Image (cartoon, rainbow, N blue to C red; front, top):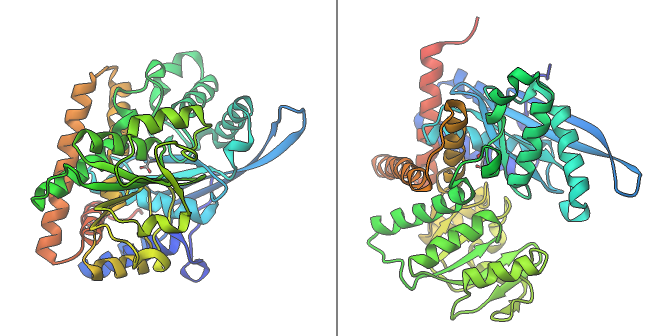
Length: 430
Ligand code: GLU
């Protein structure tokens, strides 16, 4: 059993949790959300913190702390990623779980929201250690996750391999006859282990599509438009890949190790090749020059794609931003104060819960295939993803126009109204 706890307002630190709560309050105020439903959505349903021992390669035992926060499941099973990062703590998991609830609701999926992970720096561990850490974490989560209960997926520093270890561990704890019915306990698996075609690129493709739809809406041709990317992981790379195919030019990239710029353009594929041979880092790429990290957000460009961590665009750098569009590949990259500055400057922001929702939509398709014993082709997955994302995008645009609000407020309004309707129709037990 996991305890029902909450994130009381007065205990909130400045950070992602404060940010998501302010975003929620703003939209709830605009629609005059039923106060009782507001009370429910302001808190998380369940919060699990686990401490577990793992044997390291040198024979010593290390204790790790893992989290899984389940925010809301009124629309379906809890859904959301697991991240491995030093910044993972209970407040980060709460904030990210809440964003998942709004994201899945906005996307019209039959899911709720959850998030979790382990507080660690994965670069400090060997692959064998990461495997044991992942398997032991999965075991500690036990039946608090499950294919119809709570379905994890990749997030920062986790990948299809991580999901395969989770799947294998979870299945191994079930009786033989039940094993194959648990394939959809995680999504974002490798294709050979029940994954779906297209899930690898789904988030980045969704970021690209959001930008494309926005540009179409504004009558802007993406050809020769300059874009910068923060984070050259799965999301940043695939978004850049599709933008480059459309004729846009990547002029700067920042990752955990440093920042590089070339106004003439940085080849997305060349940079990917380079990072593969350079322990994942962009630093030292020959066809670009290094700049100080603090210069990154002030660089000249049309589109800026934060695709790394939360709270990257703040009061400190917002006024320096020259892009006219920010496409949020990451969750919570822009804080509320920065957003105000940007909106006053006329910068538009495609909010995370829309912009990066391609990932969880792709996860939904994987989950459906596992559940129904189907295997879909890549083209089919991509076409379905585009259709779903276009629907969400159009809804956000319409709501923004109708209510005369920014895109984030519009996205939150749609997400919250869907949840409100579910509560109104079903009532509160008992
Ligand atoms: N971690 C991704 C996100 O933040 C994907 C979640 C999922 O596919 O469940 O949206």
